[in-house]
Length: 251
Figure 1: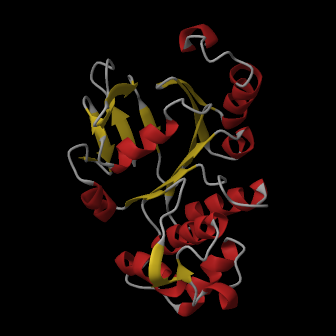
Figure 2: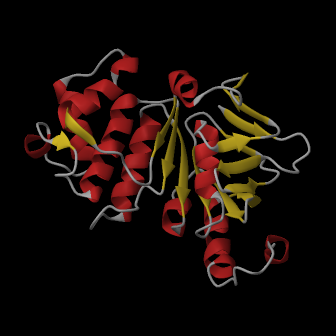
């Protein structure tokens, strides 16, 4: 499904802004299998979101070296729009506002690539994220909704979209009074619908529920493997770790 292959693993991604040119990711080698839930876990500032934005092709995140293979094709040179057409989608940590666009229409638009969606499926997607359809279908995806409500609606749109690869950036972030069980259930729904899922998280509980997990620190993937082992390592070694310690010393 997804492979990140870097030829020499020296400098792989650069964050470019008018006043910043910072090397973020280094030597990333990662694979996400078909219908696999793969968690990237690490502390804040580890480079997890940068990895997500680089995979999505977000402007300002320059991929400098190596390959991003998706379904057998190198998509490293493709734009965010072209990658979306290939079946890659990203659920943002901070969802966008769409003033004037009703929730019903927002969810239907996302599903157009799958040949459309029924009203019943839209309602079911809202229930999956613990929102009552009768209360939200005709509301606008704008400022009247809380950040948590918009986040839930965005996650519902990922369900209706049925992407080949769903990248979830901190799916539990900003959602008020949501249980981790709900998040895990949502991720499992995406897998059951045929999607591969790459989850960006700093919660070891979410990583532990994945098929595979990778630990990230200072732009480097330290190790990949069994989710429980990776989660325990993160909990016991990384959370107490002084941020000034080099990743090589943590390993």
